[in-house]
Image (cartoon, rainbow, N blue to C red; front, side, top):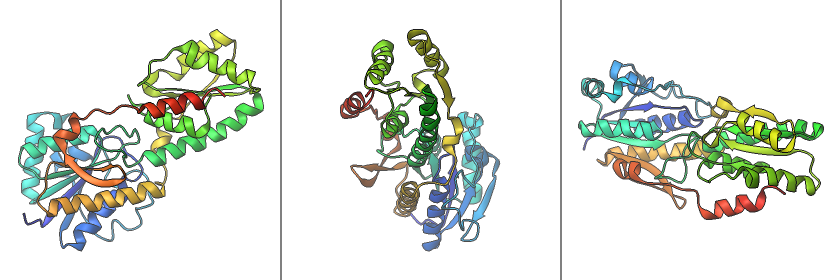
Length: 323
């Protein structure tokens, strides 16, 4: 397949490193003499024909920028057959030989819909939740984790000064990978994730008691947003232990900021590989990492895969919290 012109879009929730990935797609395309067009506002932009030609000038100095220069949006119109046909029509009108779609599982489903209409697509996982089942790593996770760790480290200073209990809610949608990683990194008293059944007395109350017996007078509870409300957890702690916990919801601050080196490098490698796949006639693929190597899988296979927290992660979490 001769590839002369491709498009790139970012969709769903933004993630640090998306700009690094867009830059890599554009630079790789230009290196091979391929024109590259940025599709703004995700699949909405593809339906509306909101595109901009990308070159060395307008991707200069974006490798270190958070967010996405292409903007992002969720598209209800694209969920319909009519919307998908409009998007396909845009691809044909612009003469796009392929689309690189950067985002999460919703972005992948959108790309699969385009593929079924004959559009060549390659997907790149980018979500701070790190909940893409086919890959060990998603762009944005490392930056979001480090942002949360930095915030909690600062919060711990004041909690320690006032001998208080803090309940911190981190993002992750319905997955606890971010909360687990952050909780281990900050030495939390307890970490609550949706993948594990929560016994409140055992997993929270007794761990706070044990920490007090070990001489601690401040306690850090990390809660994944999918495991429950931090405010409700705090209220239960107050009722059970007569403590007065302070609640902090980190929220969208975790999405912002300059991407870490790991996110920049992984995004660059994935962007490069996506263009190479299109150049070699591969379509309906997801770029992913497995056992430390970069590879690709079929989108249908990627969306059908299941992922669970490994037993060693649970064992480590159990051993490291509450002391």
